[in-house]
Length: 96
Image (cartoon, rainbow, N blue to C red; front, top):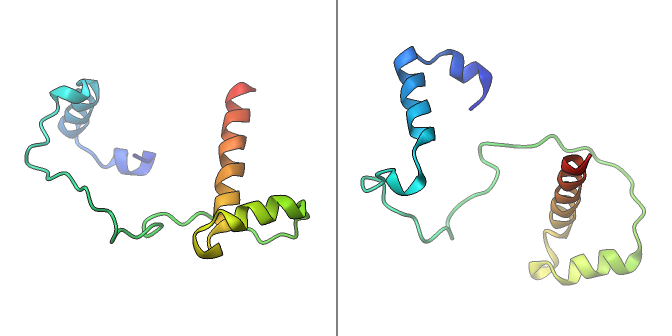
C-alpha cells in the first residue's frame, strides 16, 4: 500500500489491516472469495506500467538468439530479457 493511500485510512481501518497482517496465512478466512484457477483471460500491466527507456544496447548474438528461440512464437523476448536483468539487479542490490 502506498503512503498516500494509508493516510486516508481511519485508525480503525489501520488497526484492522495490522491485525490481518499479523495473522498466519492458514488462519485467514477466504471462504467468501473464490479461488481463481484459470488465469488464461488475465491481462498483464493494466494497473502498473513501468516507465520504459529506449536505448541502443549491444548484446552477444548468441544471447539474443537464445532469448528469441525460447520465447513463445519469438515474441516477448525483450520483456523476458528485462525480467532477467531486473531479477539480477534486485539480487545484487540485496547483496550490497
